[in-house]
Amino acid sequence: MDCSDEALFAHGQQGDHQAFGLLVQRYQDRVYSIARKVLFHPQDAQDAAQQAFLQAWQKRQAYNPQWRFRPWLYRIVANICIDEYRRQQRRRVAPPECLAALPAPDTPEQDYAHQECRRALAAALAHVPMEARMVLVLCYVDGLSYGEIARVRGISVQTVKSQLRRAKTLMRQRLEAYREVKP
Amino acid sequence: MTCEQAQQLLAQLIWPQVQTSRYAALYQHVQHCDNCQPYWQQWRQDEEQLTTLLAVESAPAGLWEHVMTTIQAEETYAARGDIWRSIALEVSPQGIQRLVLQDAPQAETTLARTSTPTADLWERALTQLAEYFQGERTIFQLPVDLHACTPFERDVLAATATIPYGEVRSYKWLAERVGRPGAARAIGNALHKNPVPVIIPCHRIVKTDGSLGGYAFGTAWKTRLLTLEQTTAPFVGCSSTRILCYRGCRHERRVQEGNRIHFASWRDALEVGYRPCKVCQPAYQDA
Image (cartoon, rainbow over all chains, first blue to last red; front, side, top):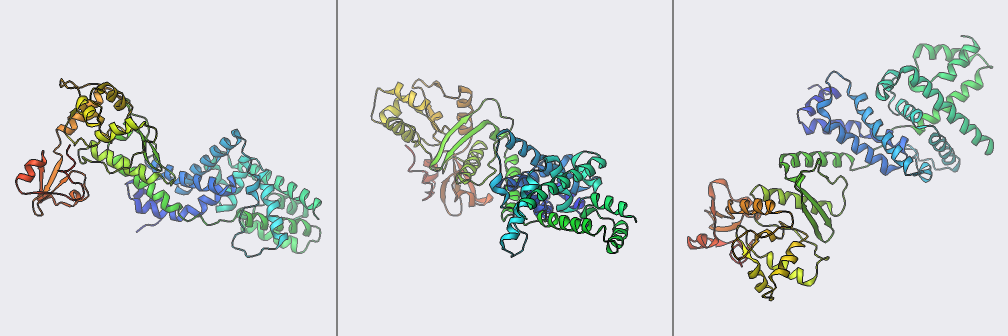
């Protein structure tokens, strides 16, 4: 049996829950991570991830089997995250206390310097504008190519590159400022 | 590769997008160039930090289950027809608090997407209501929350709840039943305030002269409900066990298709040798 994303989703389109369940299993970590790095708050990220999968299921008939599944799914996730971010902005919800809570990936290191460094990095990421942050996250979390990111966000490859550069420059500036304060 | 080219490349290079050929040339250059070493170190440090910060992390347990249960539930709702769109429910931890029948079907049902303590009850209520409207259920097994009602209203509603499926009683009968003969109009008011119509069957009260009387959600709904009840046989007997159940009782669900006998009256069933089910007690609930 063909187990590619597209083949599984084609089964899902015909109402096969199990096939869609496999896709959810395959993508849940990545989808959750994207939402987590963009929205920071774990609960918001979980809600966004759940909503993304539900929307993918509900809109399954709008999916063209010739499309690649991954960029299509990520486009849904990205749009949901951006909508949620805008809602938060309107409500002026600042998530500063959540920044430090970005988890250390499987490392048992608990030393203070390491934690401090992560905190500074997360804070720097939070100061990157949303569009640039989304592009950065899509690039690093799942290694999407420039072309794929462009398709996910509906922008040109050139804009993807400039947003990435912008995000990295901003982060570096923040980190340098941090290192000067705390050498 | 010149130093200028190397530094320009380092300013643009993103680790996940590295192309082997360009990276190899860059790597070779920086290994032998003290000038570019600090840029190289800085780039590596930045990329390492970003890769760690933006690494994939495990989704919380339960995400998959939640998605799959919601999908399943939505499919079930879709299969149950359109009655959802005409019903609005409010549920408190104590029970069903409010049920509203709407004339114009709503564009979208409000499905419980998060697991709250009341989601389970909400789900059960919708299932039972759908079965009722499809003629597959004649009794409701749901807690109701009548805290907003006065003691008199509660008495009236409790007496109303004893009227069996498919039958009607008059306002006068109900007034006598709650020990307030002559208060038929007050009874009418109390029924109008019934927060959970259908579940507490206030539509089974009609006027003494046989006319329909009023209904909080319009007489069209009252007619629809009474017509449904009068065209559905409320009892199901099992010909092998000789037990008689209300339609919707959990024992009725287990009766095999070949053994099902439909009865309009429990008296008929008892006369031909059936005994009432001990769970739904069809003969004893009759008022």
